[in-house]
Length: 117
Image (cartoon, rainbow, N blue to C red):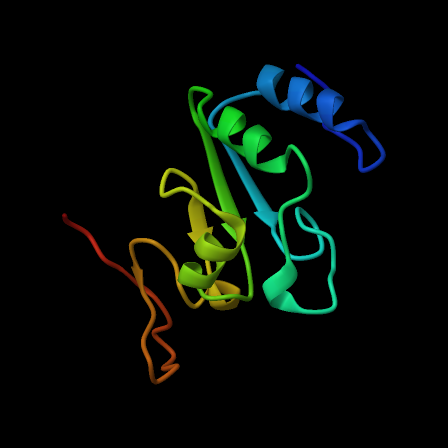
C-alpha cells in the first residue's frame, strides 16, 4: 500500500500516492486558504494554478470522490472558482450538502438524508 501523503510533499507526489492508494477514496478539501490563496477581498479569490485540473483528474479516477468544503454558499463557490457540477461542493460550513436536508430551525434532529430522485 502507498504511504499517505505528507503536508510537505510535492503536489505531483501527493496525486501519485492518492492514485495508488486503496479505494473507495474520499478526498474532502477546504477551498479558501487551502486550494485558493487568502486574498483581501473574497470576490478576488481564485483556485491556485493547476488545482482545478488536478481536482478534475482525481475525480475522474475510479472509486474516487472529491468533495470541496467552503464557508461560502454552494452557488458562490461554483461561480467564484468555476467549479463544475461534477465536483461535490459542501457550502455554508456544512449547512448546504448535496442530498441532505438541513432543518432551518437547527433542531436536534440535525440532518435528514433525502432519498430518491
